[in-house]
Image (cartoon, rainbow, N blue to C red; front, side, top):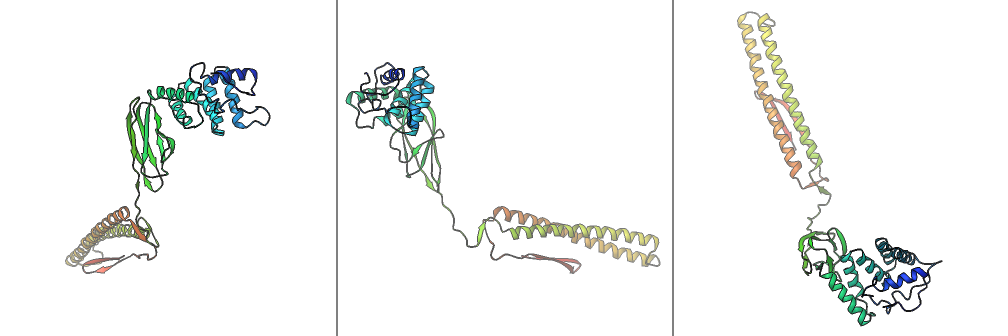
Length: 334
């Protein structure tokens, strides 16, 4: 089919537009001429829109048989202004460059027009059937409206989709996402010529009630207090151990040289008293180390498992070490 009507294009570009309208020399013309796809092109030149400039650049690339570059220009024209004549040119460039999936998707779009003549519609449907036989045509359904749908990581639209989505054969990944819902993901092995239905179910994410004045996670005051208690007990244990060993050394020295005592019995009794005190202090030091271990483990468990804290009523922690029966007494308050 030839292009009829008046097209204000340059000589060579005009001739190439005729070839473009005849589906690169083959049967399908898309007849979009009757729908005003190419014949209604406005005068190009001064004041031409960005879309028209891309369209003209695409026709010039076609003149040089550079279909890949032409596809980029036609795509830019259609993105800037979704007119059917830009889409018609884009479809032909996609087929010429082997982009069957995109061509099939765009053919579906253009076939929704109501102003195509019967012959053109029949030819377009025939071409679409040829492409669909090499692809998979998926119907993607999501249980929630307004969800973003992706195929192999590429956004194809929001639910509900108005048309089926063509995909290349093989394993394809379908995803749906929406704020407030857990994302859904399905991997489907799509066969050429198949028409699988893909169902994606989004489930609302449940969030717990917010505690007034509270925040997620452990109470920092409690954690810091636990760390302080643990460190304090370790220091107490170390200090008592040092004191106990010094007492034993001092007692042995006093006994040997008779310092602070007179006579063997007096020095022996003094040594035994200091030795008993040293043993008591060692036991208390051991208890301090055990207490430090318990406080440290308890603080760690609390920090890892606490869900909520109340920062309004902050707890207080204190440790007191004092003399007790047979040694030292350690008490704590939280």
